[in-house]
Image (cartoon, rainbow over all chains, first blue to last red):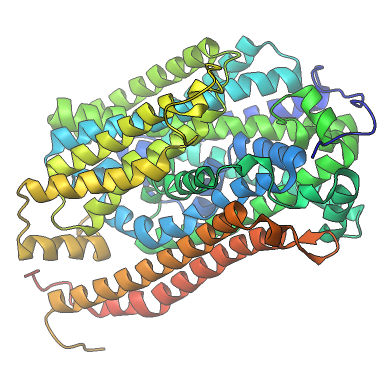
Length: 521
Length: 98
């Protein structure tokens, strides 16, 4: 089936400097820097810097989780995918939500009770610090860096398209804002940037969806019907994207279990006062994120009907401009400007969350727990965390400029695959399995992380899509189907071979801390 | 509220109950989502069928996967708030773990 637009690409203001977008964007920057100034005065200890002093309420954290999670990939990417492929885009809309119940059932509460600032706290809790922290830092940094590169390159391209700025200027603005939030305001500023962004993104998407639906008597079926009438019934059914069933299952596994292994998401559970608040915050986040993904159905099919797949691809081959183009069709240049500013804010907030998670791995996991244990909780740790923030921020800018024009779309699903295979299995076994050993943890994290990297290199994702070879040695586009079970099996076998003896009293202490929290914390 | 056994035994029983609920709910979520993915992979005809004009089975099921995620999280939070938290609060925290 070929999707065709009856009319050629419409006139669009995309690519030209947009005054409304500029105004909204500078208002956002001014407000968030104001928040950062306010937060900086409250960021005095490592507990403030990493965990916002554990004073964030469940509703605030629910919004902040949604803000951290809903990246430009979900807003622009899914809307684009639905608008150009129809139903196939919904595989992502659902896959990116179903990890949240898993986070709630298995991870959120034990993580809050067992750890302090990073998920490595929990993995290393009963094991030898140095090797486990090193391995966990590798898992964290791999996830964060690939996610960051994807966001930075996406940001550069999008901002160039939407504001008419040069790619490098856009990258440097994103990098500078991100460093300012995290460096001065730590987790307090990052949390509030996420909250502002989540409200803007949900509000903007809802407004756009309502305006689209108003043209169909608020009946989504009428809207999907209009898309089918224009481009054939095929747009309402599975199509080309999942020609290989195992690809769909493997991608689904990466999306589902990757959520439970994303360092910047896991870190957020330490910002609330207790496990019950962690639980409630995931409940809010699941509601908000699910609602948002339902809106992407409407936005995607709306863009298909009103803008058309060919016109969308003409502006950006990946389809990323579907939602902004739809906004322009519905509400003119001003609304386009608003949605463009929302997309920019979305990217900024996500990279800030990622930078904070990466900096925590460098300072809390590596510096304090491997290099200089005596620095724990002191002014030195705070200083190291800030230096790490600047290092990561500058690295992100350099990566962003280095990877200009490269195909980095796969890096988001790669980050999810590493999180699902490197971080999630080790975290789950550290929480629930008594015999999990130091060697088992290290082996599981390294197998999951490097196994994913090697298999993605050998997969069609790199060999065919990036290097343009005709064939790939490994058949699946996403390796999670192989690497998640492999990380579990390696972790279990190595643990059983290495003697880990947890006494009954030790286990009773572990269970008490897991359910009741640390005493005197 | 008094329960039989030492605090450690009570906590172990509660931990098992929470583990069972968490395990079952996780399994239900996995079955629902991968059931949906399996239909996409192996039964495209079914998903292409229309429930009402404009609404295919596939789109309806996609929306229902999201609704199911909401219901499962709601069910867990309700169980934890009404059963797990009170039972946890009733366990004597002063007794040393053994």
